[in-house]
Length: 162
Image (cartoon, rainbow, N blue to C red; front, side, top):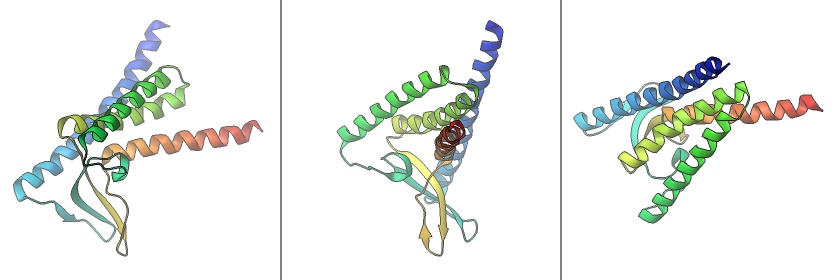
């Protein structure tokens, strides 16, 4: 049984590391483009562009502050939330563990950037007819998928119980 727990732990750890690595590689690639060309403005198609925006707030550029104290408080809050998610990952059912691992992989990627760069590089720009969604990154994709899947699963589980 202990060996089974170790395999499951390693599996979830690999999910976290794979997402963290994918996020880091994508950010390093875009940052390297910015360093060599001094700007990143890549037109992919009518709906997708790659631009580099430095986000000092939380997800999707919300709550950006110029004040260092507020930035540090948000960073500490994110760290505490990560600790809670680790606890939830260790004490949840199988499907939820995968979703919590996805959220942690993305969150660790963004937390790394907050500490290393003092901002998170966002670069995926979705738009339609001149209307732009918030610029985001690979970590944000996995955080969002994990959160939405948790909510979706809970809503339908509650409906099935009734």
